[in-house]
Amino acid sequence: MKDLKVKNYLFQAIDRTIMETILDKETAKGIWDSMKQKYQGSTKVKRAQLQALRREFEILGMKEGEKVNEYFSRTLTIANKMKAHGERMEQLVIIEKILRSMTSKYDYVVCSIEESNNLTTMTIDELQRSLLVHEQRMIGHSSGSGEEQVLKVALED
Image (cartoon, rainbow, N blue to C red):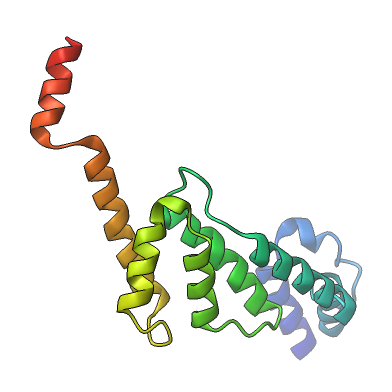
């Protein structure tokens, strides 16, 4: 009876496409073992995946024209995948990676952040907030003041 209950819970939690591959299993343990083998992977596979993620993290850099939020999202996605594979990812490592891989238009901002903050106590959220403020300022400066915008529109007409 317990086995039947557990099988029922498993069937409710498993996607239909995956369920088709385990319907032949007679016990909850059989289902569990099959799923574990298919999706958890062996130690060698995990190590290989972690190596690929490390490489991806190493070569990661902000793309020209990429927004701060987009770059943080890409970086944190890789870092979280690495954590899920057993890598110990300190905030400092992620912060330093982001700072050294920003595009050159952020050089003065990065220098300012490194000089005025203790990176060992800074959080990723604080870094992101600081970079977002600078990004907004750069967007504001590149689009000009309100008077300049009115003049540009008037000249275009």
